[in-house]
Image (tube, rainbow, N blue to C red):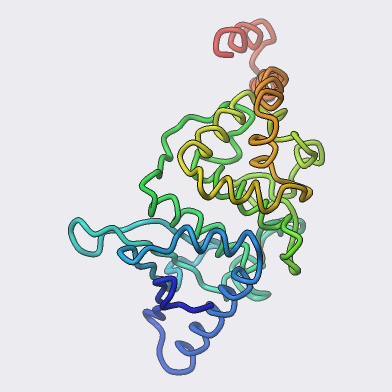
Length: 271
């Protein structure tokens, strides 16, 4: 991958000597992994802008995490950034302390792809973490994390991606997606809110989403392609998604010890 062509810079801030050189080499290699895939090239191409530089630098935290988005290094000039440290997601890094099974969407390039989706949303000035999520989608945290997890799961399903983990359930952890949700149209059955969120994403970023749909129409998991091909059917499935929202809310309230009459009243009032 040509870093200059994509207006990317790898900045090993806080590192020196061998550690700095190793960081640059590792990050560049993981970018090449992304660039070798169909979905990866689509993402990198829609991020690329002459006036939107992207800096990748080490993650400053000690937890199992990375960050990505937009920043104003100079007033009025938005640029992209990713804070990502390969060591965090390596065998002896912070993520190694997670319980068994917490490994979906956690390979180096999958993490980097996820954060680059955040960069893309900032580059297109469509970042919107405030859009509310329905109850059965709360494991995504917010709209932007939903979009990043959705796109990364498509990246994982991409047949040109040879090294992969598996479909990730949400953003609160790295657990596996429920088998029913992983089936075709499963996302739209999972919550009444899913269709509206996918529609808004496609309306916000039609070039990117249509490319994911057109270039990857028949992979195992691609709700964006399903939306473009069968929008009315996907919308109709949101009726069943609303039932799942009610069930999830009822189960949560019951687990808190709320009496059933109050559970029923709350569910009927808010759903």
